[in-house]
Length: 112
Length: 114
Image (cartoon, rainbow over all chains, first blue to last red; front, side, top):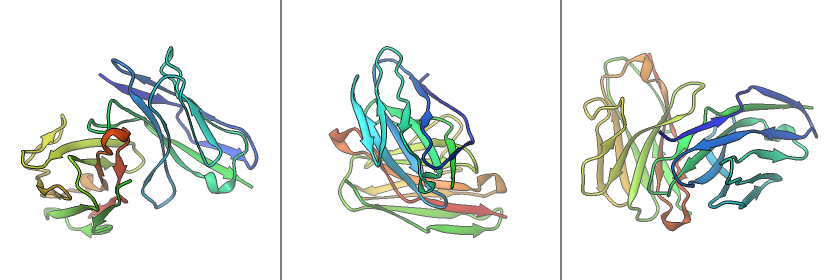
């Protein structure tokens, strides 16, 4: 079946460090890929998305590029801030009418 | 984008009781989904609710435990029946985004069962 694999945490970085969280998706066909973020005590927010190969999603300094050959969608940010501390979920879905498959989540803590 | 509200936002319940969670969206949508997020875990789909038909449950979830209603195109309820501490989770409602290919998630209901 379809699945999402992402780098397990927790990840602890110093402020202004470079962030990479790896994600790969296994499925038939090429689904849309997403990164969701969940800040402490809050709900789930869509951070960015890509709907086809070579698409780059970006938001709030975060970027991810949909690599077709590896179905990867690694999340990157050049300089993290304390306010980026959250749990990040990679996810995929064929269309918005189908269930979203979530990865296990990666907890990020950014220290001053 | 759709704006989704859920009630209650959180609750503490006694084992053996039932809780009904409401999900309201500000526009008509075709599909509504219910997910569960157990403590420290990822999200798992419980069921898909299409207006006018029975909900479709994922493996491991049954209607007797999680009955769902979908009376119209903007509203759905999920009931967690005969609760046990293992039901302590965040329950999230989501809706389809149409051809935008993104589901929109509600804020979640945090449930603690004692």
